[in-house]
Length: 313
Image (tube, rainbow, N blue to C red; front, top):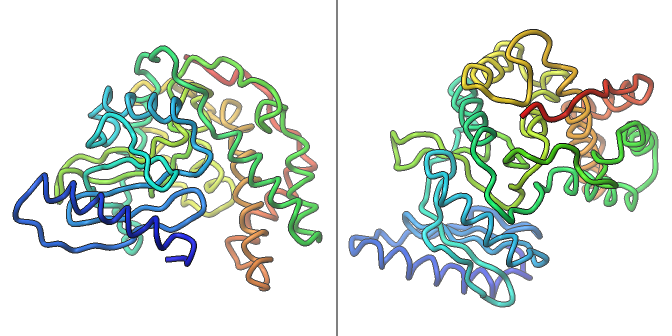
């Protein structure tokens, strides 16, 4: 826990404790901080999770995203309260605790479930007033932070790859074809089982959800696969499950890459930018995985993306 988050964390834990005790008198009163980052502080008390969202979170946007999670209970983990609380000038939401993916057991990663959940999300009706998904904005933020880092060959390679992307993928123009519900930040850390221990897998973290290009939600595993960080079998399990469930981001058959290429490149740049900034802040060299995504950016800079129809819904 950072020194800055101390008062907020104490208040957040108190909220989680009160909510947990309201839900069950037989509370084991076990409390833990799950995440402490500038964009979110997350604490758990027994079976209740409280999250303080980023300081710049827009109240109306978060309210719309909470309503989306309530509207799709078989896709998203529903919140415990319909509206955010205001705590220490931060918007706070309360959630039931779900069991996350075990990082020590990669063979048990729920790739099929993730693909099917995404397809269900992408096929759901879009409610009125939902904001755009924040994927391109997060990628642009990562690049902005990179530009402030120590310049060097890795930074230059990432920025060259960024410059090859179309304006919408750099958050410099409206997203085309914004008629599909998207998660906005899909990775395995965004899935939990609820109710535990054997409940269904559900998506969490609505902060970036909204309308946009559905290929963005497939782009992180696609980028890992293209960089050699995700085995072909796991990528195929994910993609096939998405297709079987009628996901609209890629054709039902044939080569999916023309539909995924731009988004996968953008997520590769975002990942590489974060890696370079993290390594520079720690005063260390890039590790093997970080080097792989930077090298991918170097290759991308000399091979333009496949520009194609980005939203097939």
